[in-house]
Amino acid sequence: IGYRGSYTIGREAQADAKFRRVARITVCGKTALAKEVFGETLNESRDPDRPPERYTARYYLKFNFLEQAFDRLSEAGFRMAACSSTGTCAFAPEQGGPADDKIWTSYTEYVFCRD
Image 1 (spheres, helix red, strand yellow):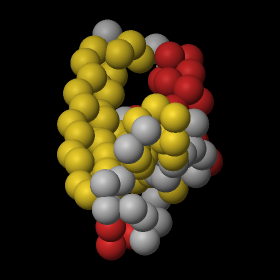
Image 2 (cartoon, helix red, strand yellow):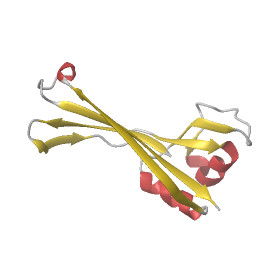
Image 3 (cartoon, one colour):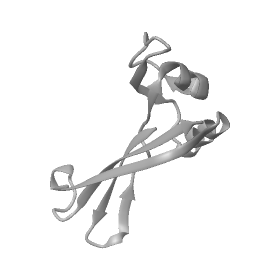
């Protein structure tokens, strides 16, 4: 499971932080397993003809709540094995904000396995 997130922090730091919701939750793994776990909530439009035994990183979920994805994985017998996150920062004057506003972006991946 992976997702990108972003938020803006101005000069006042915590007081005026503007958070955005998760735009898209991506799914990486064997096609057959992804379909088993996520069923109709799996959007296959970016890799529609993938054989069941092959891997893909192009699927995403039709909902935007990580908790839902975690619940479905848990119900299917998966457990979280690892997590990794990265973040970058850029100034945002070209976004129409004050010159000292910063936009932070992050990418987070959660790795699940089934025994």
